[in-house]
Length: 536
Image: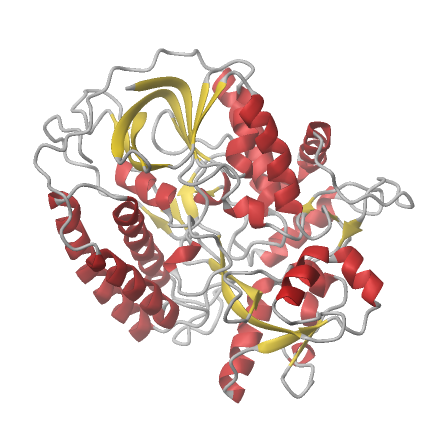
């Protein structure tokens, strides 16, 4: 058994920020199921929204966020995060993140504008901001003596005092972790556990997310007794590269921010007919417009055109996008980019306060796995990385203000009543079925009938997976599939409860928006007291 002061599950920007800010005073263990830089944060292109110059204001950034969030953003949360945006960016600069310079600007950095923003306030590192940020922080993580890094390890489930049959308030005491390479389960006991596992984009057939985005933290937190909120609000990024060899490659919001125009195959521009803000409308509006045009005209994709700009401008601002498209035979200095919408960001998640605290004692959730109230019914572009940093720093202060208790002695994982799986193909087929019906029935446009069909299939899959989990040794694929099905169920349950169209949730049966918006909150059943058992 491994004991640690702080267990962080996930290695995106939220988790790495927390680890670095805590490690001066605590021993930290990071669990990540692939390599350190393999999370969604590393894929972020556009940048980080923050109030950095005299032409902008906190109120303007807050207002833009509230408008995009379609009446469901928590104003206090939004104000808190925006007020701390300058300090968050300064912390990254102090770590050595090489943001794109512009000596003519008062900040010394180039600021771009993205959809839904009224000002240029997106600080970035060319068009590969996530990679620049994560590589900078990862180098510090690997060198820090107080940080233990467990790569190629995936969390199976949280360990709680209720599951161990302990009296008193239910608290989190650690987690069971599968060492993917050794194929062995280890027990990690922690004084504080933090979920920083990201979102659930892989629940859909088409997504901009990496393969690891399987809703792990949301599912584990739910099974441990935490509430979730607003899971129906899945943001579909309007512009994912459409190419048979381009797996999950995002075309940054900044391309539209710098003048990119959406066109039909014949060159017709269509966004002004959907919204007066045209290509700079929030993502939900642009994604629905593209979905409408594709269905109306029977198209496989639409086209994003910035080729009318000077080639030097395109190469300077979007070197990564230019290079990747060119490798696929698309020269964006002369050709429009074929694009389609794809699942991009999970706006809902485990409910937390501004310190990242969940409903469960000694358990925190930060980043995309959480729901702080910032994003409401639709995340404003480039607010997600900002939230990661601000809430991670806030969680650090809250954790350090508490006494550092010794981690408890925990039982080992029990494999005495399970055998090796006999048909791994069952997992593969179930994974494929789930992602396809979620795309067909719980996508950009929804109906009651589609949601009912999805729910029926989820219940069948859950029965199969629960039976499989009970009888066979766990594997990486089984853990991820179990979490995906649980997360899909939460998305569908939430969508069925919202009898209106708001933000990212559009229903043909309820095309109107109610005068007052309310959060969709799901509460797990209070877990029955069970005999002491190490298997969740």
